[in-house]
Amino acid sequence: MSHSQIINHPLIAPIIERLRNELPVNLAYHNLAHTLDVIHEVEVLADMSSLSLREKELLLIAAAYHDSGYLFSYENNEKKGAMLAVSAMRRASTYSESEIEFVRKSILETTVINDSNGLMQVPGCPLSAILLDADMANFGRDDFIEKTELLIKELGVNAEAFRLQAREIIKNHRWHSTAGHERFSAGQAANIKRCC
Image (cartoon, rainbow, N blue to C red; front, side):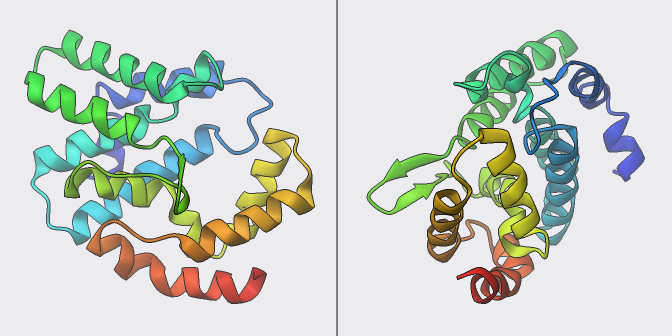
């Protein structure tokens, strides 16, 4: 599946168009650029993982919808995004209930939770781990600090306090997929040295 096929996919193209036209303008980080970035990273990680075309397609649909809940609200956006994906997949009538459920759960797993190990996402299966790694790809790339600043702007929080929290998060972050580890661990180590 080429990049143009992905962007023009009958389930992906409409949600990209909605994100382009309907997302609140104050979303400095969780905007269309982030969604397109996650789609790109899923594409790369899926290819590194030798997934089937159907597995890759399901992950790309999940990537396209994973932050679409921001069209409606900041809180619980993952649930709303999952509902949009389920609705689109059911209308398409070409996906099994287990495939729809996989996409729904994968989107919900992009929720960042706070447990005894700190802030993190928890994958339910090795396949959804690819989506989670794609969602946090900036931890292992040169744009980590730039993306952190965009998140500070979006949240309207104290910059220094948030930067301290970001340092702790990146230090404790673990990649969930083999491909994610291979693609991003060296960049993550470099980012830790740069900012921590």
